[in-house]
Length: 442
Ligand code: SAM
Image (tube, rainbow, N blue to C red; front, side):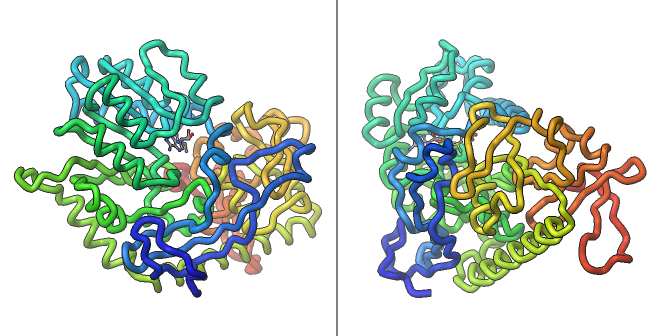
C-alpha cells in the first residue's frame, strides 16, 4: 500500500494509498474489430484514496482524446434514462428557471437526452457541449446549440461572450470523467450567472461502497465522489453545495445543487446537506480503513462469480452476457471472463453490433441473436437495469433461460410456477428458492 510517488489529483497531497489494483486492462469503452486485436493498447488501472481530501480516484492517466473522441455510449438508447431526464428537466425548470428568459447549458450533453426536454419546456437558450463527434452530431434539433468540444475554462469564456452568463449549468454522469477538474470547475465558476445554479448528477460513493459496485470503476470514471470530497474541492472555487438529492439511477447516484458562495448573503444550506455530511462521517468515507475493507469484499464477489461460471461450464451450460457496457468490461476483465465462459454479448445499442469487448474480445450481437442461439443462462452485466432487461426478455425467462446477476452479490433467477424466483445455487441443495417481485429487485 505504498503511494509509489503518486499525488492526489485534486489536492496534490502525497498522502494517497492504493485500494484496488485492476492490473493492465483494455479501456472499458474501447470496443474493437478483430483486425484491431493485435494492436489493442492496455492501461494500468489502480484505485487510490486520498486521506487528506477524501477523494477516491483512478491514479493512472489516459489522454481524454483517446477516451472520448469516438464514443459508444448513447444515453437515449436506454428508456429508463429518457424517463429520468424528462422528469429531471421538469423538476429543475420549475424550481429555478423562468423558461422564456433563461439559458441552460449542459456539459457532456451526449445525444441531447436532457436538452430535448428543456426545449419542450420552452427554455429560451439551450446549449450542449460534448467532445464525442459521433454522438453529439445525432442532435438534429435546431433549437439546441450543440458545441462539439471539451468543456474548458477557455470554452466557457467564449460561450459567455456569445450568450452571456448562464442561469443553469448541468453536468450529468460526466463530473467523474473529466481529467482537468480544476480547469472545468473554473469554467463553471466563470460562466454561471451570479444567482445561477449548477446541477449535476454523478454516481454516489455510498452506492459504490454499500453495494460493492466495483464495476463502476474504469478509466473513464476517474473520481468517485462523496459529499465530503466535493465540499473540500468546491471550497477552492468559492462554490458551495446547497442541496443534495439521492437519485435512483445508475444503481445509486446523487444530484448536487451548487451555487456561488457569498458570505454576504444569508441563504442557508439545506438540511439534506448537513445530514449527508454526518452520515458520511459515520460511515467512514473519510477513513482509509473503510476503503481497505471494501477491497476485500470486491475480491469476494469475483471468487463467487467465477465459482458459479466454472460450475455451469462443467455442466456444459451455455452462457451469454447481456449489456456490453463499460461496467461490464470492468467485471469481465477484473474477473478474467472470456470466451471459455461466455459465448457472446448482447447489447441494445446498434452502434456496438459487430464490435468486440475490450481486453476479453467477446463478440457483441443484437438481441435477435438470442432467437437463433438461445443460451441456458444470461449473465446480466447491466444489472442496474435488471427490471428493463427482464421485461424485454420475459419470453426467454418463461421458456427456461435463467438469468445471473453478478452484483451486489451473485444471484440466479428463473421462472417457476408463474413467478420469478431467486434460485439457491449454493452447495446446500435443500434450500428453498425465493420468490421475488420486480420492484424488490432494483
Ligand atoms: N450526460 C449524459 C448522461 O447522463 O447520460 C451522458 C453521460 S456520458 C457517460 C459522458 C459524456 O460526457 C460523454 O458523452 C462524453 O463525450 C462527455 N464528456 C467527457 N468529457 C467531457 C468534457 N471535458 N466536456 C464535455 N463533455 C465531456
